[in-house]
Image 1 (cartoon, helix red, strand yellow):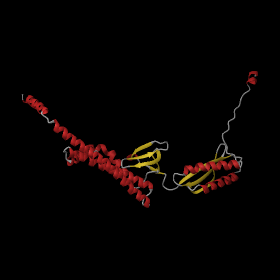
Image 2 (cartoon, helix red, strand yellow; image 1 turned 30 degrees about the vertical axis):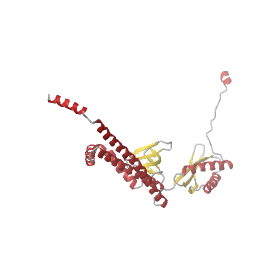
Image 3 (spheres, helix red, strand yellow; image 1 turned 90 degrees about the vertical axis):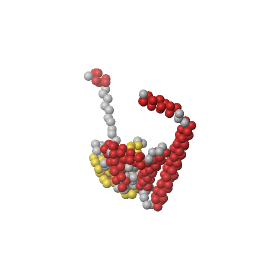
Length: 293
């Protein structure tokens, strides 16, 4: 009977709820939450703008490189965003009458419970910290990480974003970055191999190619050394391979190689020096003779 009375009493209490007061309180809470969300977006936009101006000033002063400034700016915006989210959650908890201290204590208990399962996340953060501290990679660097190569778009404490040359954006957990090959630190080598016929005068071919290389070097400011014809590199099935080497500014080596190939091809054609290409000989049997036999 007592349980039944409790249920009946609960029904009576439910029916006696002051819906007007409840709706007013719900409206006040909703208005507070909306106001907090609006303030959150405004503060985040202002904060990101201030961070951007700060790093632009550093960049203009020459205190940091452009890639380093973009890397630190992205990281600062992420940290600032995480702090704002924590403040937002804590403020919403306080609106509902929940203690921020209990939130932190609960977060500590949950963190202890999932600590063993979050070892990968901790490894990401530690690796990302040392990637930034040691300046191994910066935004806009051309790097190779494992089987992925491309341009770094973002470096964070948890993941690194690399854009492949086909446009694919790769998200790599920092713990998977064991070896980094950075192709943007210092000048890069431009290498071109050109094959000439065995019948050609090698000394004349070298002189013609070197003259073409000198003209390219005079017109292209991205070349910092060479190009130089270093001589015969290999003997092919139908050609003699001559190798040309130059040094260009980082990221410009592919353009230098293309320009060298075009200039060398035009110079060899102008001087009557043949660049061999595969020939195919087709033998057709005389069907009538075959029938007579």
